[in-house]
Image (cartoon, rainbow, N blue to C red):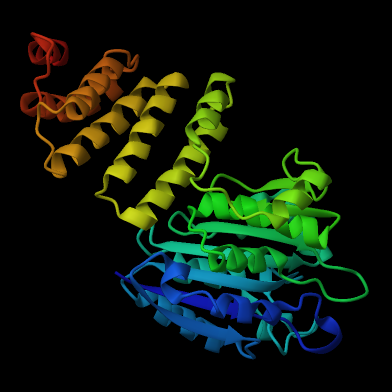
Length: 376
């Protein structure tokens, strides 16, 4: 596939500049385009300190219309529109008085990117927020939500009140990791880049954005990593292979943190979709992980539904009906279906399960007949 990478760095000229956004563009431009998008070939669109929001919107709309994966790398500063209380990305001519006319409304990004197919759009953002945006983010971390389709990874720091503008160290770390030859999945890149950025810039606090949910952390703690450990990690390349995420996901589920476990699994599933496509073994695997997490969370209906999806995907991949993974998916769907307490929900899923049982009878004698009896 052909991917598209958009490099957008924007900040006001003069005293209103609190982030030297464009300083990261040479580092990103030095990364091979195909690496930026994770595709065989890619097109790169660069927007350095653009002047007009309509021009930016036009370029984003053209990139979003391309059929392949789209990755937007975004460096800049966020300001709050005092009339509508909506965040805006400041552009070169933006001032406090002209914000509504010279800045790019964040919801324009959501509008252009949110309609793309799930798993095809990623935004990697390094942002400085003025005091108004920062306070609203503390109360409503979903303020920067881009809709159901795009994946958002990023770091937001409070804008410095005085002195030199901050620098987009988080995005710079992404570029350096790629240029070192590392090719980890995006969740791992996000975590390593956040550690490196904190070790270098040491902001008083930051907000990390990931598909799971934004989590506010102090720069010194960075997810329970001490400042000394963060400094060491910042100088070392990412280890290969990437650490297995499954033990941490399972530990969270067994500790009762079911939302956290499901969110992390969903993030890895999105990464598998982006890299390998929806009809891939990698994507099916993470669907099955989420099905088992639903079981552990005591939601048999959701678990059954996800196992049914996994079984249908495996059959669509031309796996035989008697393959252990196919039989296992249908058996687990059946097992969870029998534990659904809501009769209406069970009847909704029943026809799909029966259709699969007819194709995949499994090793349990009478399984299909038992299904028909319960469905009446």
